[in-house]
Image: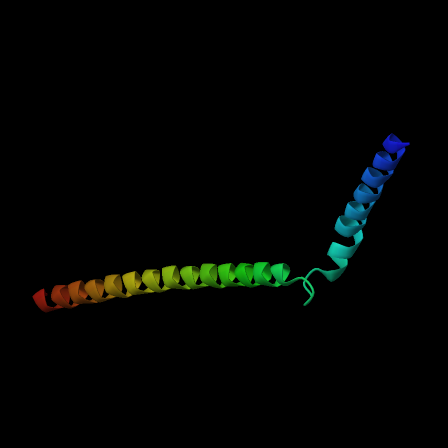
Length: 84
């Protein structure tokens, strides 16, 4: 009898966990009821924003580098024209 009671308790526990992870958790994901998901989503959005900022900074570096090259080429062309 004790074994059946223990087996029933384990079965009910597993059933509750299954219902929680398969039905309840996906339904309320991203809602006010689950603040852990809100913080996770916030961190993911901060990560994507940071990655976008890094990409824009890299593009800015390339633009600055190209402008410096352009200035030096213009100076070399002007020197070449003055020498002729």
